[in-house]
Length: 204
Image (cartoon, rainbow, N blue to C red; front, side, top):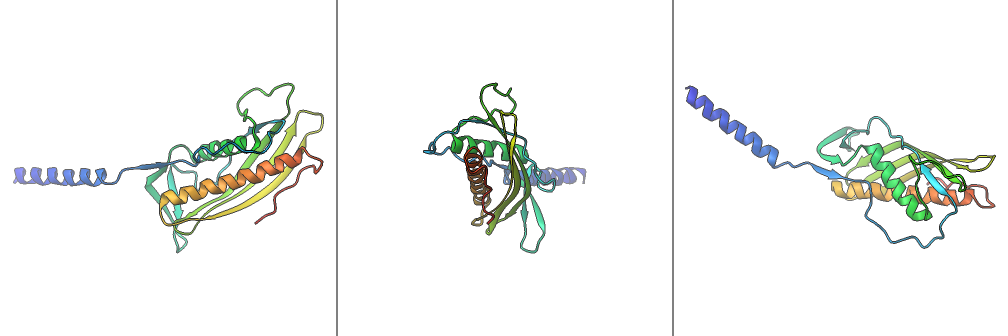
């Protein structure tokens, strides 16, 4: 009887291990593949992109996706390669430096003889519905330092990208939304140093 129980236990463990082996964990990044260098002229300032705020509900290692009935599912086998806030900041920094032709000096001492644009982004909504959309809503501010008067601008962006059904497409949708956010921020940043004095993008 004991031998039979032991054999049954071994079989059960083997089946469990097989099940685990058939469901590998997949990792995703919000950092898009390298793009061609922007043809737009480089700006005469550096940027300091500060930590990006994200809603606590989605600040998880796993992808959280919305269901058609309004529920939320945590995908244990689909994960971000880094904390979501770090992924957002890294991806946005890469897009901004490429679009503005400048350097992100976050974490480094500010130079004495060159202005720095301080950028703060607070993501209010990071929503994912496979097969339908990837949504990023964010409030953000720009502050140009380097003179007696600090010029500030406060704006909002509402971004929605349609996506097909799989999770890789969902991540690419968020990458596109981040690229659009970077475009809006970079255009506002250029206007901040022009005669226009800073103009927020039109809300979609």
